[in-house]
Length: 373
Image 1 (cartoon, helix red, strand yellow):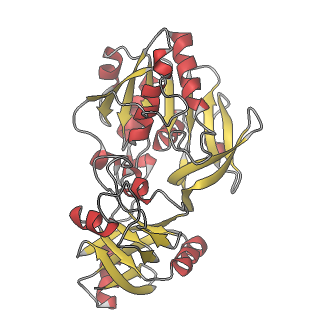
Image 2 (cartoon, helix red, strand yellow):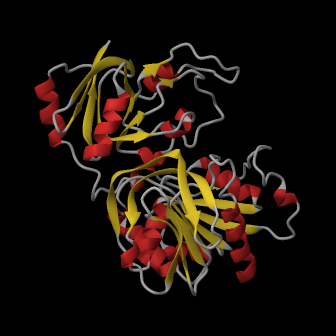
């Protein structure tokens, strides 16, 4: 099945389609992870984006029921160099193409992903379209240029839950903090704002002894406070943080009232709530190999990341301390408030790239709750 990938600058890649039949529009970005394509597909932070995997062989271990980060895939489209239709893994229950087809995700293979990645790095992330039904390049170019940008659009509401729910499942043995909750004398109730939350954040909170209640992204702060939580988690999520103004206002109201831990989009929302600003990165940070320096300890962490915006360090006031920086481009990767129990990181401490370099942050959140409890 022939397929085309057309970028808004007029670049065209011809390949073969796999997954669903149709057209997919979104911001074309790349991820440098060698494994973990199933976690990438089901990360709600990729809502609105077409993801290019830089590793050349994708699909070789299939799809299983355990490695999903949400209820379904949220990527708009998927781009690989070579798709393996016959997986080899005892955990596999379905091949990748069938999985994408079942969820309506259009994929394209047999293109030079090195050339595509180089173009994104040189000229920046841009809008694109994958099509298996329209082979007219000019037609696709007109349509992709008419498609919306992710800047200024609230994509978090699209992926958030609609009703509160409790999460009770831990990491089932593979986390360094598994069974830690049985050793704790006190358990803390945590309210987690769902801006596109990954399940492993919830598992790690349970591992550290927390009772977790997940709430929709637009839950008013007075409702959260009425739940009497020991702390509040602001989750990851997709898109432009400036577009989720309702969340910024909610966090601004909650600061100082309860310990707050922000992750990824949650970190950017904290930046805005503290009077700062964010800016769009040229091509973002997406992969499981981003080096981050902890300025408080001097240690370097290998981190998993997925974001296209960053907090502007110069926009933060004197009451905010930058705690982590990205060693590739020196952008802000973490901050904390000097007076209130509040800290946040741009990367994903629940992931396992290092494998557990950043797991201490959940202990830090627990310590803040113990001090305020």
